[in-house]
Image 1 (spheres, rainbow, N blue to C red):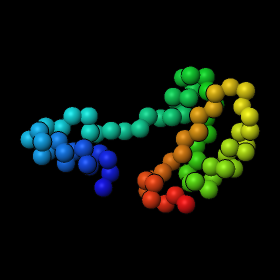
Image 2: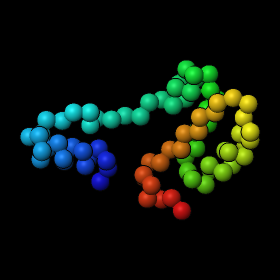
Image 3: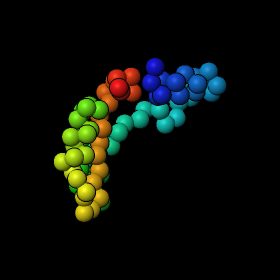
Length: 77
């Protein structure tokens, strides 16, 4: 069950099904990084994170790393 599902269930029982701020979506982190003049890297697994951080090295400016977790945190080692 996702956090969104839990919040909706709580709102249904406590507030008669009046939902507020539960249809959440992530922003486009690449565009967000660009808007702030930052570099951007996206990884799709915890295993790829180490390689991405090594490739980035010691950045001279802000660098946003998005770690996509489609299955939540269940598959973290």
